[in-house]
Image (cartoon, rainbow, N blue to C red; front, side):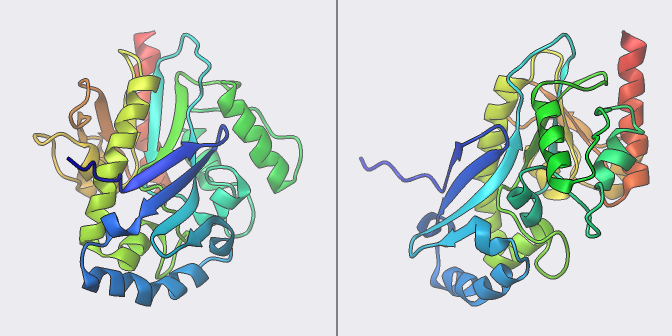
Amino acid sequence: MAVSKPLLKYKITSNIKLKCRIDLGQLLLTDAERRRFDENWDAFLASDPCNQKIFKLGKRYLQYESEQLIPKKKNERPSVLLVLGNPASHSVHAGMFFSFEKNRKEHRFWKSILKPAAILDLPEVKSGSISKMNQQRREQLWNLDYNGPYRIGLSVFVTMPSAPGGKWGGVAGVQKLIGIRALRRIEEAELERIRKIAKQFLGSDGQIIVFQKNAWNALRSDDDPTYRLELANSGLLQGRLNGSFGIPILGVPPTRLSGPCCKILSTIASARKGAE
């Protein structure tokens, strides 16, 4: 009996980089789906100047770089896996999650969400260089060199990068490129990847925090609520990881809503401090 080839293969190449390969024959099952992809590809590729540097399209395979930061070092703190939607192309190229905002200043994810929520307080970066800041932040996270109640891991749900905004931005941009049915196939493969990370990284007291609608709907168990922003804004988007070990998951508002996102995360930090 022939063994089907996997849709998605990935390889960890550093403490931040993933090299991914999608089998387009497994992803695009109809002529219409392949035609849609071919017609959209040039516009998608042109939507961010870094796409040319991180994507490589062949006849059968689409290869690209992505990001994942899962520390191997352990300490006494419980582990929390932060799962974002998909990476921004410029951040993948720069070698760090949320590498900078449009004006090349520190991203709100670090300064306006995680730090004021008391989830993660990274030591101050002394250099004003963006590349140096990204390097130091990456090393701080990898070596657990920060203050906060948790041991933090970072992952994306959909590994395929896209522009940070606009017509081809975010997970919606990936869906526009390949179509909803193909996106669901990718999500099934990505769910298995997240399960593996959770098994390796999270202990008996670990949890997953989810920042994006597609990620939540794919990771939740069948009995858990589907994504609604009002539930995320009120801290009521709660459940267990689909098919895996009873790991708790919490859906929070997207990072573009920095105030509501910070507010919900702060309740998690407060609950942890109260339990200590």
